[in-house]
Amino acid sequence: PTPRRDLHKFRDKNVQMWTSNLLPLETDLHAGFRAFLEHSLGTAARVEGYPRWGCKEIDWWTQDVALIRHLWPEARILFLTRCIQATFKSGCSMGWLKGEHRREQFVDQWYRMCANLVALKPHLSARERHIRDEEVNDQVLAEIAPWCDLPPPKVSLEMIQFPREPVP
Image (cartoon, rainbow, N blue to C red; front, side, top):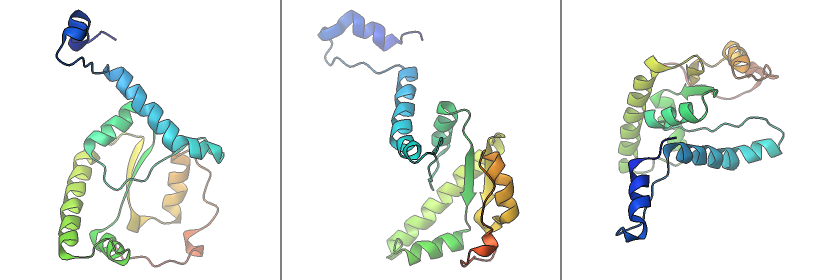
């Protein structure tokens, strides 16, 4: 990569600068981010015998997705969303939304997260999918597994007993 202007300035002035600072090249910074995430998130998966790793994040910004796309262009990104009522009910049952101010924060965050997803949806690549939690069934899981290069599910959702919120 071509050295940036601040590198030339740093080399020219060196210790004569008021503060000797040097920002890393973007390529070096991205390589460091990737190495950090591969080590911190991927090591545990590899120790357990899994060749891949993933992360569950509820609050994706468009810039986060752009960085993931850049660092791992081969990555599969699955955006799994839930309806606001089910999410709110879950947050209350977990004790996360105690107090009126927490509920207002939840609604504000939910609105922002929806706006981010709406901005991302027209730009999803073939390696990215959006699925609503309320629509997940055995057929959807059977489609997603090979898309993620995973074996088909061994258990049917019909065999698992858990309450499902109706789709509003």
